Length: 330
Ligand code: ACO
Image (cartoon, rainbow, N blue to C red; front, side, top):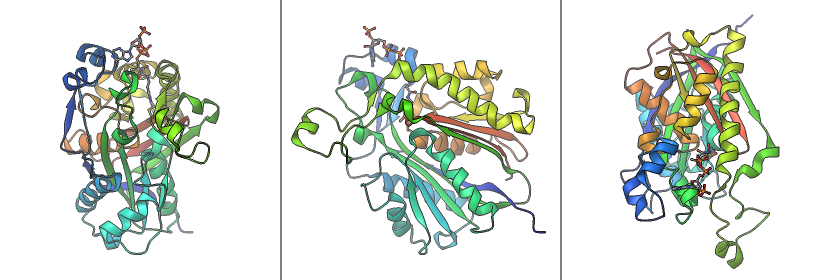
């Protein structure tokens, strides 16, 4: 009988726009302070895309780097998934735009909309196609231009978000790979973070624009409470079936929403501070792109070596969440 192959990451890439917006600059835009932002979130600066730079442009840059890292060409790719809540447009899917820009074959390409959990959901979906032998090389890209849906008059949200993209190539691996996956959602709490207008419920009108309904609305303190428990529970439900304890984990690559959430979740699962990879000081919350960029950066820095067991862990709008254990195979 043919044994199912595990899917593993064989290439990673990332891209952030050149333009950096510091907390000091935000002080001039809204009633806030660098001290408030750093002490409440850990964020010092974020990257903001140019007005002519769309999500697909950032996605393509990250994808090209991931393909190079995997020693593959665009025509080697069998599947493209883009995780984003800021697609170039409602349709066609940003994944189709990326397919054309990369010069990939006429392979399946689609978007998924699960906010900050998108990179993990994307890896989870693609890994099923790889393990079943349906496809050999899948490109998963998490890309966001959150600056386009941020209300720059709302100090409670505009200090949090940034733009960027991360990409991974998944392929069958002989050793290691994705060992476990835990995904979940709770639509009852969807009101906690949403973009109210622009869809079929509230199509764009003069009133919707004047009401600023095309920007992110968020109940931050309520989300905060759920986030700590959800992130800890998700990590535990991915590690427990493998019998892994905190000390067996080399590094947790979390969604980067708030340093206080991550420290509290880490305490809950018994992790030491140096077992959590943090980069939100430089990038803020890039939704789906956060964990993808963090993984690419951690690998680039040599923090993850062959045989290491790492945990990807995210939660976000939906609410959605996801965690996975990967044994590094490169
Ligand atoms: N500068 C100064 N003061 C501010 C700012 C600001 N930028 N923003 C809010 N405040 C004020 C508030 O008005 C409030 O003042 P008040 O007490 O006079 O009413 C006070 O600071 C405290 O506000 P809180 O919202 O209670 O502050 P909190 O400590 O909860 O921090 C934060 C807010 C950072 C948003 C936090 O709640 C958080 O990180 N929540 C989680 C967000 C999250 O994880 N989102 C993930 C999903 S993202 C996605 O899916 C795309």
